Each structure stands twice: as structure tokens, then as C-alpha cells.
Length: 568
Image (cartoon, rainbow, N blue to C red; front, top):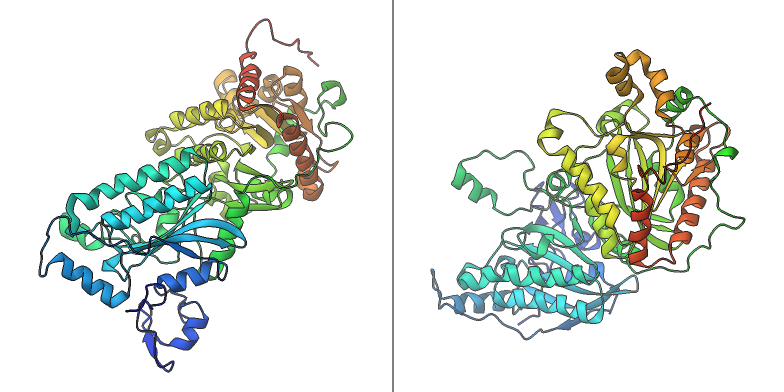
């Protein structure tokens, strides 16, 4: 009997002059060529299903895998018989695949980064989840916890194993609690969903990782399409339950082609491995201005106009310039992937950070796709998910603020826009990691404050931060949006005004031609300001970071703390 670690998932052994058919485009494929291409169809790029051995060879450093618990076997707890007794089904599956169960786990390394890995073998009873397969996943998680190692879970499953009844069902709770313990311990868990992943797997361990990736076109869902059609007679949309549709719906972080999986996992492991040799704080003092007297008085209308210039760098532009590495994460895991908020994990001066920011764009199609930087509730839910990620792994949070405000539409209100913003503000206020925010353009109302409740709030010289847009203020208080210039002046929303009021902690000077005229110089200045802010906050304990943020915000509105303001 051949071991599951060498047995192919389809008949790929024997004579190399064999052909197979692509399950997607039906092209005839030469097996020798297919093997060289990691079993990806050269005609349509559809990834064919991999055996456990092929999967481990694809992802892990050569010779690094050490298998654990190879001798565990399923138990017939019910005496279940359908068309044949369950023990006979197990025996046939073992004979056909060489596997004892549908899960193989062990330790290994990816790009020299050690980890624990568990792989599901779909060829063993459809990758179904029984008591022992759940136990194997649980043991992998326990080992990861004990050894303080990341866990990679690679899933391919048709769902729960009905022949084990409620014992199979209870594996959802058993495995979920193990991943919960990893989460509480701040240990990284990455899910890689492959075709297919359904049922009990997607209601537990398959989607509970900190980061969820999927292979292209993988079928992923809870109820299978056949069950849905038979149960509620509903027509299913095109690409239903495919990885790409789940990405658009905010359920997974990324769809990664097979040839990019190994380097992608390597990047994620590095970014979560803790600080490396960090860049020192900028020499020569704090690289942002903290005294209003040192700033020119700029007309508020000019500042507003400049802040709204669509050629100013966006969050993604800053990410490309400022950070050594940046890996974007997608979705709020419940309702959508709002393109007006972007974020992910990055490295700043050798230190891992979580980045969150509003995203507009430079051309009309992108501005429309990004909703002009006005987030829906799902955008704020995504931001809050990233805040949780930061605290779990002890990563500072860096935010970039540039929004006219939260989207004011009917659908946003029906989905709880105010609550979504409030929860972001609350979460930021209580994070036990440093938070540094930079207002890079427009800072409109609560939609901006949702990303700006920070230990250190900085602002670019031509940006603004306000309780409402000048047009909104003019309409409400002066009876006409045509009075926006007057409202902008009265709102005292410029960088100098805000520094004098104590709302911001520092002003990052822009090049003479403005941020939109010299991205490189602006990015360099923002990077130095962020490094300085983080260097100042790094010595503080988690409790003192929360106290620092608490003290910063409690002074606003206290008559004993109000600054005297000079009118020009």
C-alpha cells in the first residue's frame, strides 16, 4: 500500500506518456508537462487538485517536513451502514489512497521560517471531517501553541463525515477552540482554501485563520450548490462560491495563483515574525513642526482646494514609497470589501506594522470604484478587523486619513454607518499598541476620526481636519453652499489652526509645490515623521499607551485645558 505522501491524487504514476483532461476547459494535457507546471492547466490556468505530497513539495523547503501522528485511524463510533458498513468504506479508502485519514500534519519551513502545517487529503473520503481528522487538526494547533510557531491549514473537504454522526459535528467546536487559543496567544494562523472546501470545514477551522487565502477558482462555501438548489429552489449566479467571488464579498484576503503561493506565505511569515534590526529614529530632532509660530498662515479656502487635489498621493501610493514590504488584506469577513478603505501588514524600518487608510484615486474610473474615498460600513468593519489584528500581534498601527467623510447613502444608514464609525473610534481608543495617524488630504468629520483616534495625530501642511465639510457647514448655518469659503475660515481647519488648538500634535511640511508636486519628497517626510512618532511611543507599556491616548482626548472641551486662540 502506497503512503499518502507519495500517492498521486489522480492516476499520475507509471508511464510518463500519459494524458489527462482539464476539468475546467477540457483540454488534453500531457502529464509530464503538467507536473513541471505544478499541475496548472497551461491552456486556461485552472489549478488541478494536488495530492498531499505534491502540495508539501510545492510549499515547503526541501526536506523540511516532519510528519506527526501518522498512525491514527478513524473509529466506527456508530456502527453506521449505508450501502456498505463504514469500516469497509474506511478500508477501501485506505487501500485506494494509502492514507489512514483525511488530514496529514507535521512541522516544516517556508523560506527558512519554521511552522506547523496541516493538509487535508480530498482523495480520502472527500476530505470529510471525522473525529480523528478533527483530532489531527487539533493536535497540529496544540503543537503550534506549545512550540510558539505559526500554523498553516490547507483545506480540501466536502464537509462533515456523516458516518460518524454528532461526533463529526463536534469537531467544529473542537477545532474552533484550538484556533481560538492560538488567537489569544498572538500566534499566526493562515488558511489556504483549495478546491473544494465546504460544509463543516468552512464553518470552523477553514476560515478562522488570521489571514485567509484561496487558490484561483476554488469552490468554497457552507451549503453546496446541489443542496441549495434542492432545498430552496434558488437559481445560482455565475461564479457562485468561487474564490474570486468570495474575495469580492469580503470573505477572504486574497486569491493567490499557485506559482505565487510559496513566496506569498514566506512574506506573511516574515511580517509576523517580530521586529528585525529597526531603523533608528531620525537624527536632528522631531521631523515635524510642533510650534504654530513656525507655520505660515494659509487661507483656509486655498488649503481645502489643495487638500482635494486628486494628484496628491493616496494611501496605496504612500505604502509603495514608505514601507519596505506591504501585503494588502481584504474584506471585513462578513459583508464586503469596501475599496474606500485599504489596509494590510507592512514593515517600517524593520518593524512590522498594520497600515489602514482611506483610498481615493487619481483617475475617474478609480475614483468611482473607490467611492471617492467615502467608506461604507463594511469599510469601517474592515478597518476594525485590522485593528484587532494589530493588537493580537503587538504591531503598531499607522493610519492615513483622506476622506470627505463617510458615505451618506440610504444603504449605508440601513447597515449601521454610525455604529460602524463609533466602534472604530472606540477600538482605536483602547488599543494596547502605538497608534500614529497622518491626515494627508481631507479629514472630514467622524468618517475621518474613525482612523484618527491616535496617540500621535500628524497632518500635512496643506491638509485639513474638520467637524464637517465647508459646504455642509455653509448650507446648515449660512443657508447656502455658496458660503463655503466663509465657513472654511470660520471652522479653523488648517494645519496651523489645528496645531494651535492642540487637535494635532505636529505638522509635516510639504514640498514647495505641494505633496501632489513631489511624491518622493512627501513620502520621505512622512516616513521620517512616522519613525519619529513610533520611536517616541515605543518605550511606553501597553497600559501607558492606552493612558496616553486617554489623556490626549479627555482634555478636549475641558475648560481648564482649552488653549487661547489667536484670530487673524
